[in-house]
Image 1 (tube, rainbow, N blue to C red):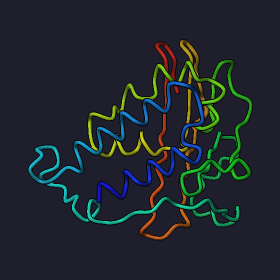
Image 2: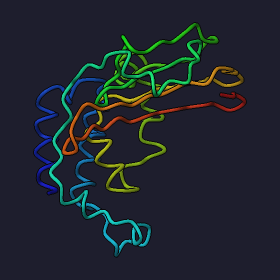
Image 3: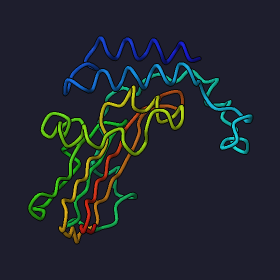
Image 4: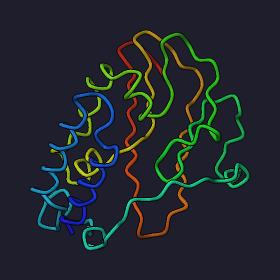
Length: 193
C-alpha cells in the first residue's frame, strides 16, 4: 500500500503540489521519503502496540474530491455563536462561503493554510514542520507530504484573542477517501487564545 501513496504523491506534485513557497516542495519530498522508509506503524512499535493500524495500512484510500455542502447541513455542528471566527472545511479544503471571520485584534490571523502559504510564507516556514515533524510518525509524514489546506491561526506576542475559533471539518467523501488537512495554530509568548 505504500506504493499507492507514493503514486498519489507523484500525481499531486505534478498537478499543483509544487505550488507555494520555494521551500515547500522539498519539505513535502522529505516527508514522503520518510513515510516510504518508515511505512505505517505496527504493534511491534511501542507507541502503537495497543492501536491496530493494519485496517488503515491495508486500505487503498483515494484523495477526497472537492465538494460543496449546503449551509443548512452544518446546523447540527454549530455552537450558535455567529460572532466567533469559524472556518469550515469540506473534504479537507477551506470553504470560504461557509466560513466567517469577524474583525480580529491587530496581527491576529485566522484563515486557510493554503492561503497563508501564499500570504505569509516566512511565518509558515518557521512553524509548519516544527511541531508535528514528519519523522515523528508515518501519519505526520503522510500528512505533510499530501496536505493541501487546513486551518491557520496565528496570535502574535502579547495579544489576546477573546473569541474562540471554531474549526469545523465535514466530509462528503465515502469511507475509502482521505483528506490531509494540516492545522497550524501558533500562539506566541505572552499571547492568549
